[in-house]
Image 1 (cartoon, rainbow, N blue to C red):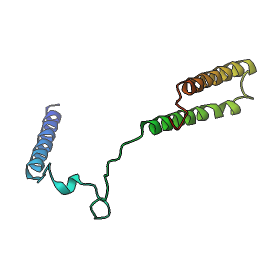
Image 2 (image 1 turned 135 degrees about the horizontal axis):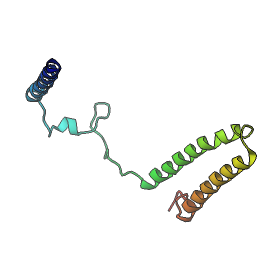
Image 3 (image 1 turned 90 degrees about the horizontal axis):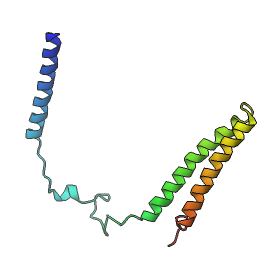
Image 4 (image 1 turned 30 degrees about the vertical axis):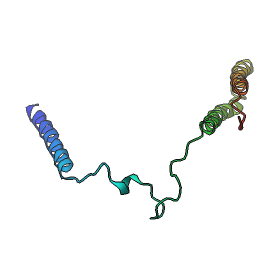
Amino acid sequence: MIILMMLSLMMIFISNLLMMISFIMSKKSLLDREKCSPFECGFDPKCLARIPFSLHFFLISTIFLIFDVEIVLILPMIITFKMTNFIIWFKTSFFFIIMLLIGLYHEWNQNMLNWIN
C-alpha cells in the first residue's frame, strides 16, 4: 500500500515538474499582433472579420433542431403501432402531438417563426 502511494506521489510530482518546466521554457506573447489578427490566405483582411451574429437566426436554428429531435421521437410511434395496445398508443401519441402543437402555437404567438421582424 505504501509503495502504491509513493509511486502515485512520484507521478504527481514528475508531471507537475514537467508542466512547470514547459511553462517556464515556452515563449508566449499575449499581445502578439500576428496571432490576434484573422488569417485570410496570408493576406490582411479587407474588411472587419468579426461581423455581428444574428440572434434571430440562432433562435430559428434552435427551433429547427428541436423539431428535428421531435421527428426522431415520432418515427418509432409508427413501428410500435402494431405491437402495443391501440388505446395506450393512441393516448401517448395524442398527448405527444398536442404538446408539439402547443409549442408550435407558442412560437407562432411570440412571432419567432417570422424571418423578418
